[in-house]
Length: 399
Length: 184
Image 1: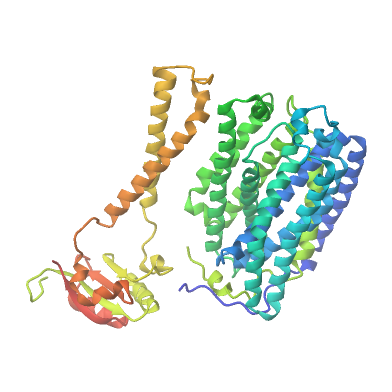
Image 2: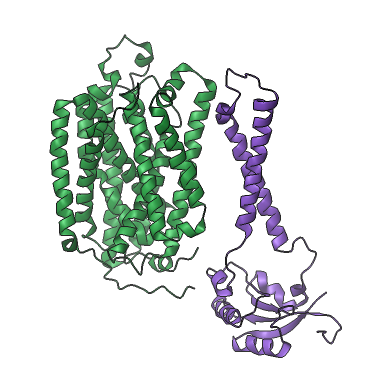
């Protein structure tokens, strides 16, 4: 019904990698220097480095998993609006395969990270009752399984989507829907159990049944923010101008808002139940994070991740203004990093914040590597699925 | 204005064959400067808000006010008794503002409840509901509106309303079965 949509040519729109060779070189250099420094750090101070690396790794893991989630949901619900932004989601989700390499240090440094690996059987009955799950062979097998499953779904969905670019066969859409139906439980289980293994396992005595949804809520909201940033960057470079409209921004903003609320809902539900029940086994997690110098950071997370964005994103005008929305998106990504920092680092520094150079270097090294791979990936295909049967509806989106 | 049967004129209405025709007609009527008019269709038509020039509804402001009054009610009813009037230690929890986690669920619920009430009643008032009948039902063709009919009606209370000119405008936009709809 709307008058602005123009049907794009079936060739699609291509990202010229040569235009950004300088940026690519910079990121490549940053990745190499960062990873070499990380190698030195891993040898010099393995304890601090292992936690910093886990922090950097899990931050990007949640972002990539979130993008995989949005791709799966797009197909499973037969969504219309997200067709034009789907290729970028697919590209970021594919980075999960690269992240599999960055998971290796976690397995190598397992004795620094996971206390339960160092305790022989018979020493702690609380641990002994969890041995059937918490044992090294199963742990390593699960880590492999997560990446095979998540990476497999991401790879398959992107392959089919790119194949559809060539001939426009609607059968690919049906196939992607089937993969998405299988992918939903795979995604839910893999993200939940990887969060159990790598984050909740930092303290084997503590547990929370809300842990999976909590990590998921953060991942989904922050990956939608990442999508806003990526799309805005592509638009300011001159791409997707006639394809992604303010209406798409409005929807992305609504999702950011929704998952801002959902994150708070889950986070509070987890906190309130443990605070109210007041059982030492459960409260130990929050006592560490709500005392000493961790306390101001926890407060910053509550206000910066929920109350601030909630109040701002309530306004419709913000969601229809790409540059302002991008600023909020950047802030949410920062808060997601703080969230992951507050999950990982207090397990090491229980007495208060002790910043380390590796806390900064590890995320930068991983981030530069992933951004470098992303820049190589994004130019390979059209920037949006040009022959998706739902493309026209997506272009003519109105809220 | 009075119809030959002695009733007051409510509106001049026209029927359109398709949603697209109704959409285009709405834009013409909007550009002609009418304010008191409406379109009727069996299903929501995307983009009709803009085509009618409706602008942003003030419903959200009412809902915000409802939500804030719900939040305030919860704050007063929770902190008033347990912090100021009857400070008691329950479950070994503090009784001053630090007990706020226990109060969040109620603050949340009352915010939602009052927002929902505000939205519900504001929608009723803004739509002029409840009412027993609507003048548009005096036109027998209008019963098709829940099936396959697309209608546009310009009300007589619009300051630009003129029986002949408005009829001409609807004719130019491709309206069919143009008729005068009378009040009850």
